[in-house]
Length: 394
View 1: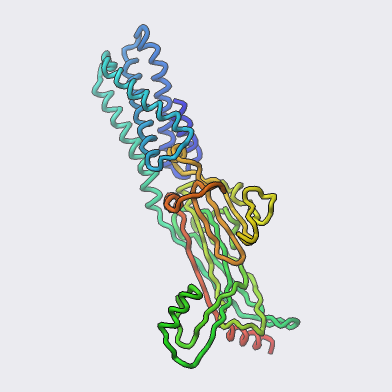
View 2: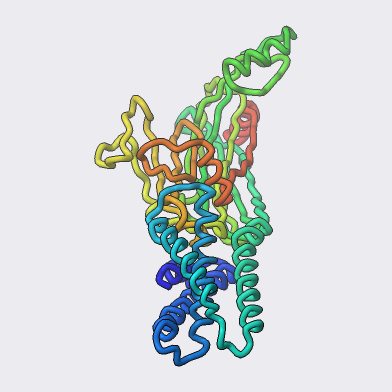
């Protein structure tokens, strides 16, 4: 009884969707049935004043066996140690023994309508199974995700006091899907330099060299030796905040480029990394706090600057929308790393800044919680920016 109440109560009160709350309520109700069965045991193995006490005890044993079998079935998928394993594994063995004893003694004898009782048990089990399957598998998969992302450069302006050009940049995002999401994101502005040549050369050779040296897939006939330099980077949305269905957010900012720059083009990449809110619940209070890798006071988050550079870590516990999964798994955490020089990386796994985590576990975590990344980019030539700024100053 206690196990079922502990498992179902969080979902019954705090699940995101109605179906998930119904599933949690059914688990809590099954705990109430087991409580009634525990009381009926006193009468069944005592004076047997009530003819239905045996049937109630039998129902309680069936519910215990079904619940513990489901927990074991879910646990086998990952086979991770969890303190709940020390509870539901012995209870499963007990429920098998108790059920064998009750069937051997024909505990249902004395009931007026044993077939009606059996049908009620079957219907209840089917409704519970369908509800759990719907809330855990179908509903999260049926709600699609759509993002609208835009990155646009504005008209540049010359600085009359300094040899710089001010370039406006507008970033926009909208949750156009059917569910809210947690956001971890950034934008990065790159400047590109290149070597120009009027000779055609071997285009295939240039492309191979570009792949080997720059890890770039651009292939242009008269341009070679592509290099990208980070000009500006930041976070558009506070890490851990969520974007509701239909909610949009935009920001306008300005970055500077020297008039004598060697860049030929300027590009921006807007990256939105999100986690579906109907798949899990993120501890946003814990996750929002940035941890500085170079600060020894951060303790386990500290990493030597010569090894990690200078990074910000965001780390917080995430719980599945179905508490049956939470009690059969080790704790899962969302970890995001942001650096002013590199694109951010993230993972969802049992990694808690101790030990190592297999890539397969990270992939399962990302898939289970519906994490993904969306992109938008834009590019403008420096010649166009300088011409617009000269026109402005003229």
